[in-house]
Image 1 (cartoon, rainbow over the protein chains, first blue to last red):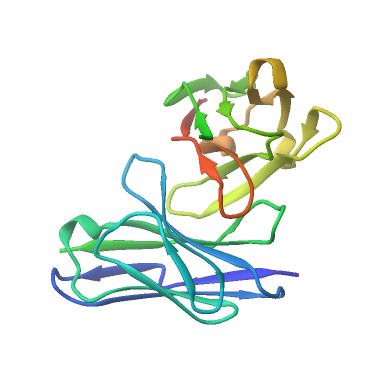
Image 2 (tube, rainbow over the protein chains, first blue to last red; image 1 turned 180 degrees about the vertical axis):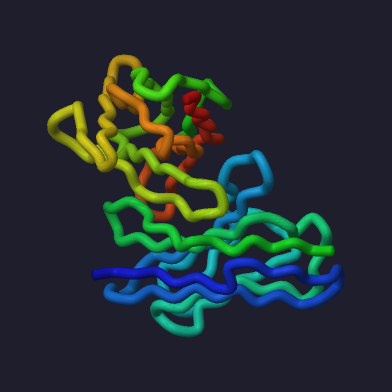
Length: 111
Length: 111
């Protein structure tokens, strides 16, 4: 069966520090991968999606970047965090024609 | 452009009462429709999905939803709510790479 792993679960980082969140999927090949952010009390904002290795589409210009170094690995990064980067980050995967499966999320607090 | 509207930001129901969460969508073709549930601090879990066929779909945890093309709606229902159903519920429309989520409805269950 397919599983998705996302870590860390919580993270507290100072302003200006770098960020790296990792997401891996098991049990499937060539999935579409997504990074979402959920600010407190708000809905889901799509940040990035990827249809293949090295293929990244950005939905919202911001302080973040994404990379897909392997088929089932998706990384969200920042060189210098801002206070406004705080939020709940969700990774998800899908196959064409199916719904999304989400990871358990990372709570990021920038202080 | 496709979009999803969940008119109710917050709903409170008594335990044992029936529940209906509203979802309206705008989509250029026959939509794929989904309902997700999110417990606090957790990722999103798929409750049910509609791709085609029978317009009344059954999901996990006793939930069902009915697709009404004429009303562009996909409302979620449950005959008897349990305290453990308290969570945030998201309606979504679309397919891979083009999924749109509603802003969510927060459900509170009174004892």
